[in-house]
Length: 203
Image (cartoon, rainbow, N blue to C red):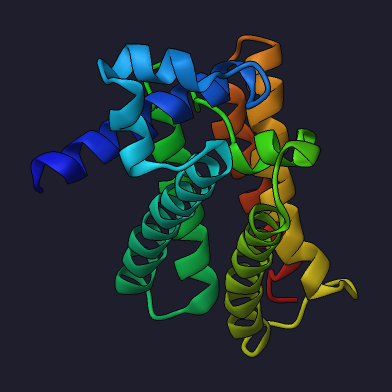
């Protein structure tokens, strides 16, 4: 990584931490510049304005989450050829990963953008929506693979079940932070895992 790339990454790390702690509206370019030890011209060399910073933060955040899901769900498939067992293993691994975060999950950048969407241009709002659609589509594809082998015990809309995982994770992040209980995210993922197990249990 070049010096310029390292500086850019440092800016993104500082900005993301600040945004997750207090939101975009309360995060100023000036404080990011001060924390990074840059001049204004140094910052604007990398990002022309706050929207450009938010756009790259979002892309970085989505790529990081995509890589996490790739690693976990690939590992689940490696450990079992059965699509249901592979998903259950993956959810257990996801819960364990969340439990290993020393101070709990830092927050969701997608949620931060949604809550203050008027601060951003259409491209950022579209990127946010597309990232959620892509994650839901990923989970729906997994559920389709399970349903091709195991019929759900009750009639369910698999799109809604796929959406449910994203809802549970974001909701549990909020609840964990509100109640100062980092373990809630892990526990909610495990409850979802139990629901999937029951939903597709052979008759």
